[in-house]
Image (cartoon, rainbow, N blue to C red; front, side):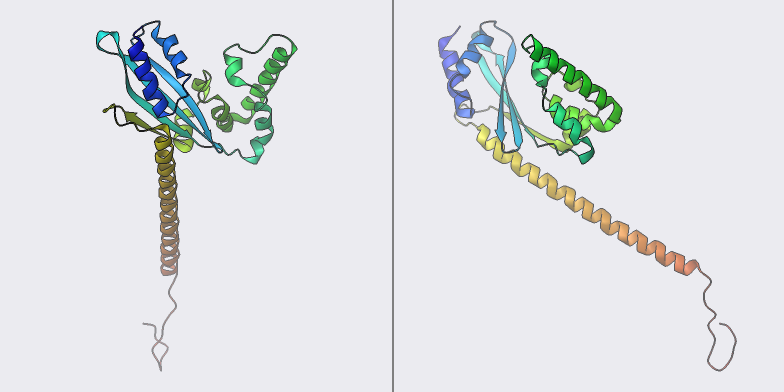
Length: 232
């Protein structure tokens, strides 16, 4: 392994927002000499989670370079009251550990597996609405493909941006990405509210137009000239 390459990458990754221990992750990947690999960091900011995935590729002379990183803001999922009982049970299961077989053997393991089995039965009973809970707990795990409405839920609860590395001296840090995505999320919410107001306004206009047309469609009252009973 090229020590200068590893130390250079470590320096840049720490500038991004990784801890110095990222060097160990680098060495574990590079020792296998893959054509490309990803380094992942997850940060909790209040009730929201930010996922950062840095993509590295092998370049000339078997040296590795950072090409880009994907930053994703995943908002806290708000669960409707009717799903809260299932939500409370799903919190008890470490789904990432379960799907990777990392739960310790013994009674605790069997209990967690039984809990997961029971809650999966409850999810089947509630139908497609249960996808919201699957997304909440399975997004980012190997279970993610089992979320039927994954694309729609991502559109509703996530926002992403890809940042490329063009200049080694200029680094858009994870802190910068957090501010950028938070701003974009607020902009997205404002745009959604504007659309909702426009729809409501158009709905009122349509209702008024329909009401007016109904009035016109009724038999008009017979109007008479003053002084006689003739209709006009």
